[in-house]
Image 1 (cartoon, rainbow, N blue to C red):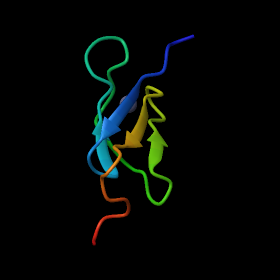
Image 2: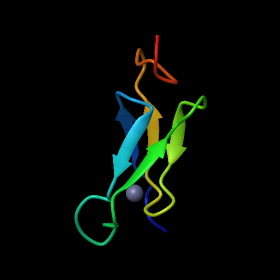
Image 3: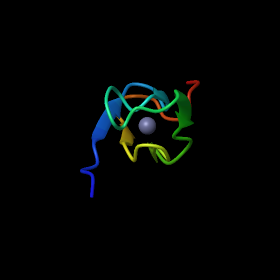
Length: 59
Ligand SMILES: [Zn+2]
């Protein structure tokens, strides 16, 4: 079992490449959409929208 990392992002669109080492993978772009969070299907990192950031883009 790998410990899942939770990463706060400023934007609902994030790019994940798994970082360095064993979890590395080709860079993919993930979109949180309306949910405000998304999990990377490659490395299992959990991205959440940082409090105060705008969800869904626009204004
Ligand atoms: Zn990833």
